[in-house]
Image (cartoon, rainbow, N blue to C red; front, top):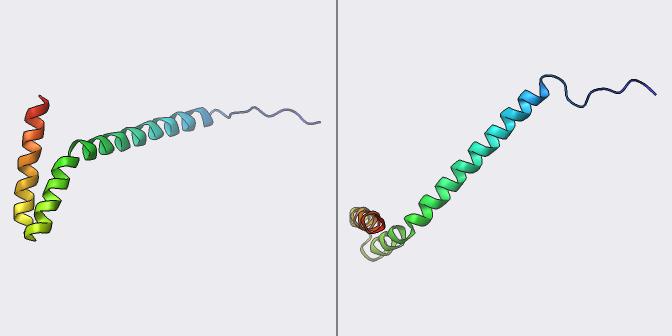
Length: 76
């Protein structure tokens, strides 16, 4: 039986900490993106309906902005 090697070399804890920070940041970004999509879901759906009915992206964009502003004002 040879000598036991240490579980972690001096550089591995640093790499592990960097990996953990990276994973936390990625999860935080994913959570923010999902919450934003869910928050604006009503505006997205209504704008999609307007676009489907009119085939005009300008009307859909205006609808999205108006519904988004109303949603923001209603929440606060």
